[in-house]
Length: 246
Image (cartoon, rainbow, N blue to C red):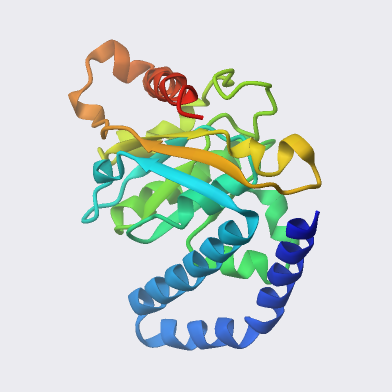
């Protein structure tokens, strides 16, 4: 319980004390938007690593060499924990925005940092707005910014990591329309950090594996037609393999 309290206090303190930082980042962005983006990225990555350290996470990373450092990608992962964002975002080599639920907009300061980091906010009940979010994500990729999506659509509360929900295929248009590589991400045991014993946070061994890049234009017609299911199968195989190491 002490870890949960410390992280809550630290998060609140950071958000309040970061108000001058937000103003500084806004000013930097007036003259050099790219410098602002990189500065914001590194600040938040540092804080996420601090949170993970306090939480006592032992993270093993496999296949990080599969992540290109010179081009934007579409990250696709399974979603089991609130800590999935911390685990994955703290390792992104270039600017990366996440597609988040629109309810995150209700949190002041947090939403401001998310906007700085090119996060997009999805209304899951509005099909038209959802399409616009995908179109915006496509433009982000074209401008050199990676996008991360958890295409199960919500946090999976199943007992096993392998029991994944079906992927929403719409988010894969971000890759098929830009031909950017898809990077499958398999997060094993991340729910053990917090969700399995809510509200306690406990020391947990987590494995994050990055699969080989998937290039949509190199897939056969059938796999490209069902690219969400194709990617999901790859993630499931990684999860099965890594179960033995936990």
